[in-house]
Image 1 (cartoon, helix red, strand yellow):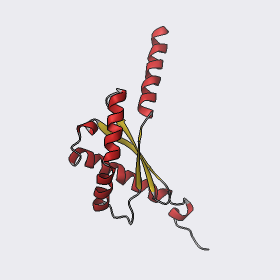
Image 2: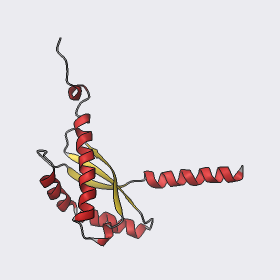
Image 3: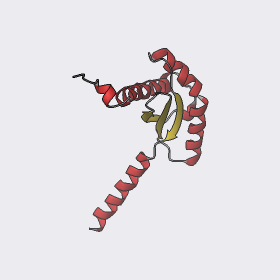
Image 4: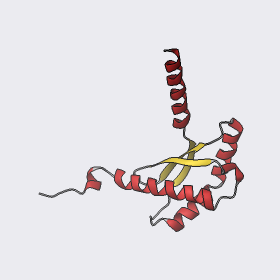
Length: 126
């Protein structure tokens, strides 16, 4: 009986997960060491999701500042630096084609803060 490789059974999720972790690590490093734009000074990459065919990657980021203007500035700076990210990733990673990068603000940090606030409110009322 023929055995199927783990990657074949699971689709390309194993490979895309590995690529996502590598992209996250590299983009965080590029942000710290290559990008000199002060608008991305407080940006941290929290997660990366890569499609199964490795053609697109959604990069989720958090920002220390909660001001809407800072968020807009950081978003614009990340979009502007996309070319730099792709060229640096091409130098650092050994994959055939670097995915198209899309940056989205990670809402889970704010959501977690709201839940903490609600829980603290419940504890104080009891």
